[in-house]
Image (cartoon, rainbow, N blue to C red; front, side, top):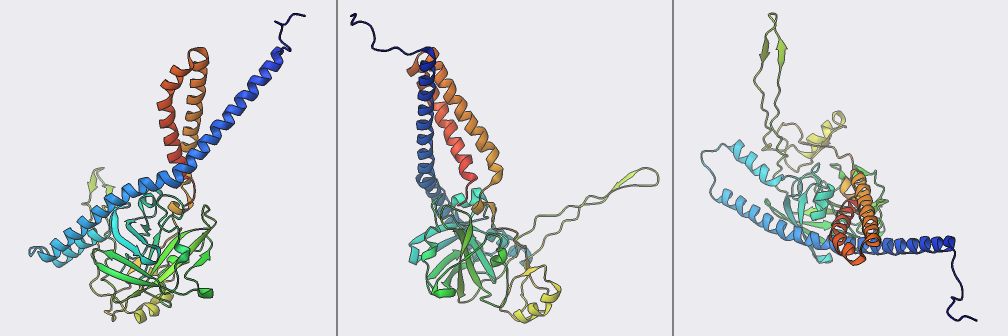
Length: 380
């Protein structure tokens, strides 16, 4: 008997099947590693990025407060009252993603800078203010949204707030304190469906000057929304409506002789109202303005029209996920796959370690961009 002969030999078909199963196993291991990396990116990587955002936002807000204090201490005597009010409104109503307030909740050991807007990019930086609602401290229902599981998770423990807990907010108008209102069962929150956007409305019957905190519920899903309502303790700040951009109208008409005439653009800039109507005046006109959302104010009627805010139509894509990011997420997933296949192919045809070394950095960059877009599509 020849001892040099193998105990058994594989046919070409068996070798092919073995190779296929080996590749499948390697692919599943790679997919599992990518899944773990994505989970780590969501839980820790996004929090790291939010912390960096918050450091810059905190400095920006401090500079904003200092600018307002300088303006108030040395007003420009040459400017008119309307111009100064309009400039002050610009300090209050900032572009989306910029710092507008400092939020502190002692019961949750939470201190975050609030940004303007509730878009995906805005909520990545911190809690976001619904621009359709008044700013914190102003008369009405000011609403703020935040993540519970990713991007710093500022509202992770919002369900632990109890009736009577204080929520403190500082804006360029001053510092304001809200107190959590008791809900059914003695809780400090209640749960609603994502289409119940009426919590953003400016009703006048219950807690007209309040703060509404909004996030997804339960964690890791966008199935419902958890709501915390807090009543303002003390006086409200002056109301300043959002400054509207100049509106230009261009009228081109053809004359009898075939010549074109052009009218000068009309610029319309709304200035903030100095006096606000009373709650009685608003309720008396509510029947004729059911389609509008009005800001309640505790002032005597001045005969002016009620101040109006924009009607909110959703809780924002920042909480529910951005479906527009699905296409780039799929595209970058394909790019990651193609880079991986190319590295394996080149390694088999050439040398494995040089191919892996060359393909490592493009693969890591593609994975990072893929994670960035994929996370956008997911709820908070």
